[in-house]
Image (cartoon, rainbow, N blue to C red; front, top):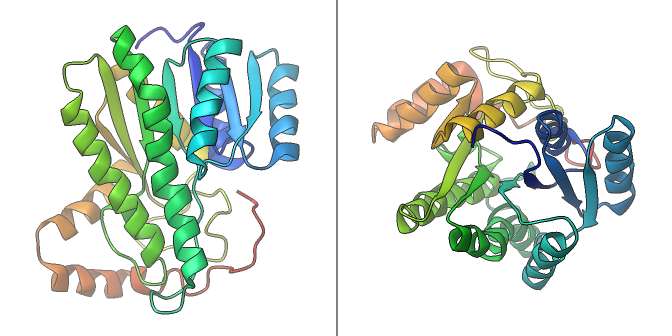
Length: 271
C-alpha cells in the first residue's frame, strides 16, 4: 500500500503515547486517521491537536474489550468517514505483578484489552477488507510476545497470543488481498513501563522509531518487524532455539529478569 493519501487508518488506543504517534505519522502521509480510545477527554484533545495541524482526523470513544462496541464502531466509521483501509491494533495495558499475585479481575481485563479486543476489531473490520480484496492490519505485539519476562507474565501471555492468532489469520486469508503485520517493539519510552530498569544491552527508544517502522511496514507489506531490529530480534531468536535454560542465563546476565521489579504499579496512564 504505497500511497496512503485519502486512505482511512483506524488506530486503537490513540489518545496518547504510541497510538498518537501512529495517527500523526499516517496523517502526515495524507491518510484520514480515526482515533479510538476509552479516555474520551484525552481522545478529543488528541484529535483537536491533529486537526489544528491541518490533518483529517476523527475521534470515537471505544472500550476495545466490548465486542459489540467494536462492531458498532467499525460500522459507524465506515458510514461517517469511509471504508477502513488500515487497522492498527495498538491498545494495550500492562501490570507489574507476579503470576501468582494478580487478581482474577486484572487477569481478565488485560486479556480482554491486549488480546480479545484485537480479535474483536479484526472480526469487525477485516471482513469488509476481504470483500474489497484489499486492506492491511497491524497488530502491535511486543518482544515480550516472543519471550517470557518476570513480573510481566500476563502481559507476555497476551502478546504471545496476539502473535499466534495473527500468524493463523494471515494463513487463513493468504489469498484475500488483506495483509498483516506483527510489530515487536523492545523498550519504548512512552511511560507504559515507567520505572522499569532497561537491560544494559538496549535502551529506551523514541516511540517515533516504532511509528516510522510501522509506516514502512504497511507501505512495503512487511509481515513482522522488530524495533530495535537487532536486539529485539536476537532476544526472540534466543528463546526460539528451544533452550529455555540458556534464555534464563542470558536474561539474568543482562538484567532482563529483574527489569520490571521496579516498574511503577500506580502510574495512572501516562502512555
